[in-house]
Length: 218
Image (cartoon, rainbow, N blue to C red; front, side, top):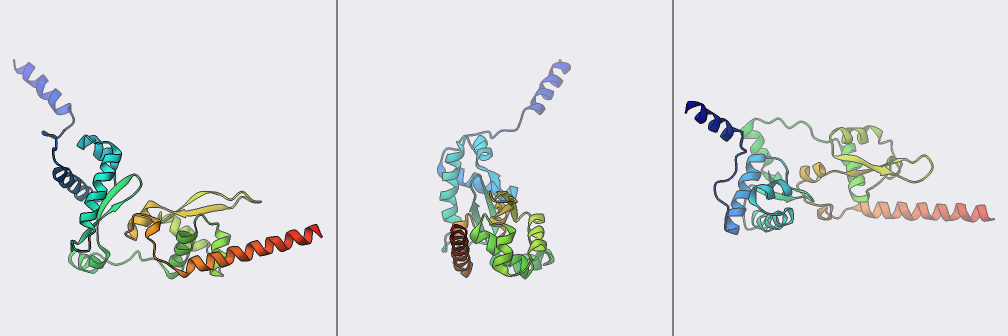
């Protein structure tokens, strides 16, 4: 008898833990989503959440969108916000409360990006994918150190190569970039002169290419 009990206990400990009761209402599911994200502290895939809540990944995305409207409403006056990414969702604190968090938790500032890194990041964010030559041309200085620093911090990544002679590397921003700056997509980036600079540079390059082509034909 004791052996039988021990075998049953052994089997029960090997079974993965699952919720006792299925959630019935949207409010319960939103509360469960909030609890999961709060406990995680990092981006959680919609698919993983769906496996637990009994929903498809697209349904979890829809649920997260409705919950985010509550979290991110200007009238909510919350200290946290919900960020939606293509495949994941995360709860994080609002930037304006960072000084209070650092003070209470004794977190040192550190890790701030240099002015050069911020310039490079802005050029990439607003014009991606771009080559390092493009970045250097916009800034007027060599940007290799800043590019490597941003790669190490995982704020940018190589996204391919430009199909020209030498096939230079193309760079773009990452999901971590979105999380760090508290936005869900690049569409939320504020308007900036970087766009005008890029357009002017592109027009200049096209004019130079047209002039070169005319000279070759002549």
